Length: 242
Image 1 (cartoon, rainbow, N blue to C red):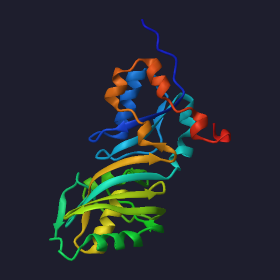
Image 2 (cartoon, rainbow, N blue to C red; image 1 turned 60 degrees about the vertical axis):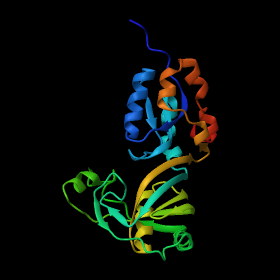
Image 3 (cartoon, helix red, strand yellow; image 1 turned 180 degrees about the horizontal axis):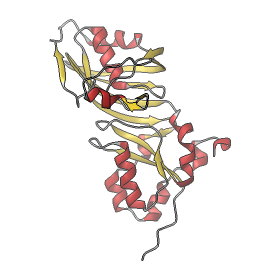
Image 4 (tube, rainbow, N blue to C red; image 1 turned 45 degrees about the vertical axis):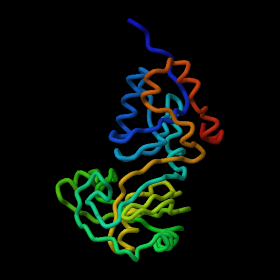
């Protein structure tokens, strides 16, 4: 029997593909690396892509610290349609024509007002638990329960492009922010509604998308190559957290 390779310790930055969960990525890496101590520092929705911070071996103890970092995203929202999940994976609830008066300047003005400290109500289709039950399980049964708003900070919410009904944007936000809820709330403020159609995490704290490796690339790498891709724990956390 071939012995398992020695465990890796460090942070592996994965460019998560769309269509799978963050836990799916962890499971794939457990099989690839033949090790059990693997976690991640911040879930991405199945639709979302980009920076997924994977913690290997001793780095798993840094989970809470790294999850607290601010995040950066680039995404696309579609005006004129709201969905039950607030993104493109859900069922369309309402369709409203986007008025010609809804210009890029109007979008920018509304986005500017959404920056700063605020409270955000988590969506029903989320993994947040109420009395131990994930909200999405209740939502799938058609149930809606009261959710406690959480304190968040939007450091930047910038319009990158607008070709009606789609708008591309960049957002910098605190941990726990639901970007699809931000898109939904923006659409509500503007009138015709909106939902998120694409999302890419470009940074988590100091970790940037340029450091990320795709799953197909990792599948082709030998163990020394993967080890060379690791971010050392001391580079991602202060000495007292390591």
